[in-house]
Image (cartoon, rainbow, N blue to C red; front, side):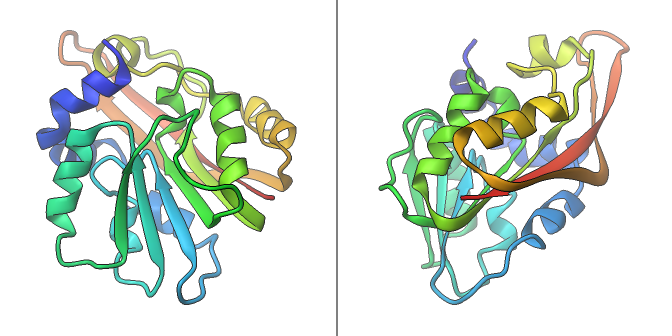
Length: 207
């Protein structure tokens, strides 16, 4: 099953599922890396049902929620139906339908381990950022919990931080830094007694 099909299938349940996976402190850590001004353009890449956008929706900025799953975005639209500063975009990770040099910030939470080619996806986000714009990613450190691949359609079993740094730099980012979020992603297998607890990193770089 593709990641897109998987998330189309679980869209209505995702908010309840996500609550057990990782805490809101992950979002707070990512947003703390931004210095926002009114009307800045900010993208939530792989937005799902709006975990990151929930922390941005009340701010005087313009948010673009991007996901390949129409059903995930439909759930999100209902949650933020009273917000006029959010627009929704169905788009693939390697071909984001935004102009060059458009965004001030791009954020992506638990996005990268679902894409086929992370390095190309990072380079595509780089294209959409203005000079001086910043990409902030929160995702999983390398792990060996195979049920996350078979049951949750993860494409990657987390990442080595050295690979993340290299992909950022190859895309053109400078001032690249990777740090701990001081939180873990937790999940239980639905078919065995296995359970996972994986540390979460935050990576960011400037165009």
